[in-house]
Length: 248
Image (tube, rainbow, N blue to C red):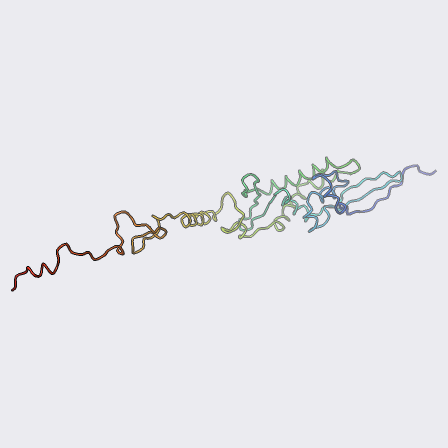
């Protein structure tokens, strides 16, 4: 007796978006597989660390197929936690303090975060992908296995090295600023010194020996310029005065 059950063929795949396809679509295209979905969301992570998942495609004899992600690329998702640069996202692990910082978009300043919050972000990305993928995807691993504490902690721990920032990231001369930090005092001193140098008025500047300000040429009230002093002719003729002086 011959079985009428459809024959299923299984093979592994590293699914990536077609070159140029993402640029012609919206920011969140309806990707065919989980790997393509995340590759389009985080192209920088894709270029540096490769495909997000190893996937298995089961193809039945009737032409139907099912795609299942079976292995996660930890490096890819660690880099993805850094955010999408096209949207101005930025997340760093500041090594001198062993602390997480993220860019607050409205203030344009870095604020502190925690490993738990990043694990929640990672889980949220997977759950959203599971909800948006087409029905031919088996999303069981996205919803259960890859969202487990074990995998979430592995991704965040790997991100500490991939998203690491040294002491120069928040230095007083760096363009990156945070709400609180020891370098803020030096930043304020630099701004204060610059304001004093630029905002000096004539009264603030040192006087010259001629009692003039460094940036003004006019005389100060009540001060006579020595260049205006001249020998004046006496009112009494010195010769007449000498003639009238009795001889000694």
